[in-house]
Image 1 (cartoon, helix red, strand yellow):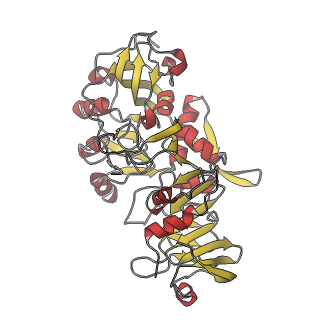
Image 2 (image 1 turned 60 degrees about the vertical axis):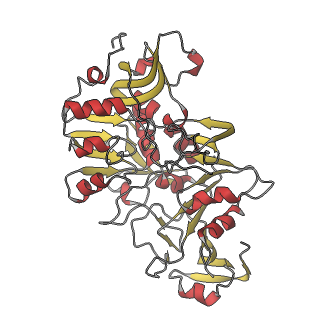
Length: 218
Length: 232
């Protein structure tokens, strides 16, 4: 069975290490905050100017001045800090953020990512995604393996305008976990009940299966 | 610059703004936007404006109000979702739009405020954002040359300000506001609380008053929440 969005988030949370500064994008990446493993402390960076992002507020405590990069109301934690947008992208550009998790429409087998524009259809803009992918030390993409029509989103090369070149290191999809290497996608884990054959059939880019492939623990 | 910066209201603060000028507008989404000045610009009716702001508001609030009245010729932003009228004007060709990375937007403001003509950034290398731009390699990595903004006015919103134009921002409503305040040839600040010079601790000030030309206390802040989200 293909994974739910929550299971994808839960698997990505296993990549977190104690002391990491982490930027979580909009969509599935936001859910990763719900599955931070016990005993691990991470600080969430929100690129609109907050380090140490807390959970959503309880009703009645929403504050229009306190939002995340997805414009949702949030809270702070002990030790949180606010800063302006130049400093926010300064810490991203300077490599101080350890891990960036974001969604994608397409990823190529060399690590190119497309997630900001569908020409003639969607013109929302790149927001902070181009800055993040150009500078992040480690980028994990959370995505559905195929689009609604069943076409693979793991490609030889992106058909949509790209957000960044050769930057994605790992993909967690609803079918498995894939490292991106010189030899393209390497499947290191498969979702419970998902066969290697299905993964091969639904991956358009270069794909190899790791010799010691495991079942995902989600 | 006059040291007498306090004006009565938004109408007075924006009275010098002319059609065809370029405006930097602070805020992220609807958070920290200069509500009073946007309303006054709609009333004044100046048009053919170039607006530089991270977002374009929503249909009936923020910069969306200036789009409804077709006062904007060109929008420079990083993310423009959540605005149907914007999308309609863009797809019909009525509105010119330049989408740029958010960090590039911030840094082009910063460069202007720090008196630097341009900066190099890795954001957008190898993408269509790089089209026609100078690429330079430093230490094995490519960077794009991006120019400082050259804007006639910056319009920002702060939490507190004093009669000398010193500003303090609150929470994530800070965002682009201090950067844009520094980047405008003329800067207008609207604040929730205007106090006498000397009542703010100099250690707490985010934007020194030297960057601010006009300041006033705004009225009836709506401070609309775009995506109210709770955990219970």
